[in-house]
Length: 319
Image (tube, rainbow, N blue to C red):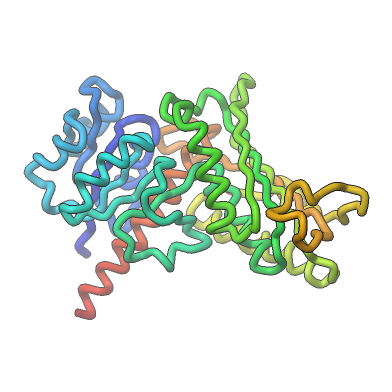
């Protein structure tokens, strides 16, 4: 079977972990190039040892590489600002981009929720680590009952937050909040990230609060079932993704001023709060197991590329 060649821009932790995943686990992809800007980075050194072509001249170096024309998909694991510049250079050259930064140039994609809608897109955005972990839960609730407000809290080990993550904290909250609405289906969304300094480092923990209109007990039962099914869907490509405890659905007291959280004070009042508690353990392909926040990003990006490559192969076979 002919595999699709891929390049990874960004030789830091995320890019290197993604490279290992492609080399060890991929069905439809093969490494074409690892791209960085620091010639002494561990990621470029590791790629060279594994026989992967490398360049430390950034995206311009990638374009100049002998095998550039054979590369079909490019992962961008740099930063929001860098991705905009990279996309401007690569898109006109016919490369499909999977963006692991919060740049949000292309449509938001969360594989378990909306990948089928964007298989032909030329640039897709993987939202954020917190978004990949929590938006499936919001979507699972909203496909059963209206979600008036959804709030997510992503707690990650401080040690797993590198310079890129720290530099993009504002973009993290803005991009995730937007995707909670656009992909998750909530009427209003809010995202909070916590860098947990605990030692030894703790694995990623995520909390999802949804205010819903679910007066019918049968609806509440379907919400629980929907969340469990969605959790299994995400775990199919992120094995360390799991519910930490049983989903909690509680009535909202009449004297609680939830109107302050709604998109409009005139909106119909929600009846219940749905609380979901998750944890994400990394696969430890390159990064420690506590870095589930990075693992869910690389695993989701890999799933997108696998499906895109498979769809492209099927299209060529039927042409």
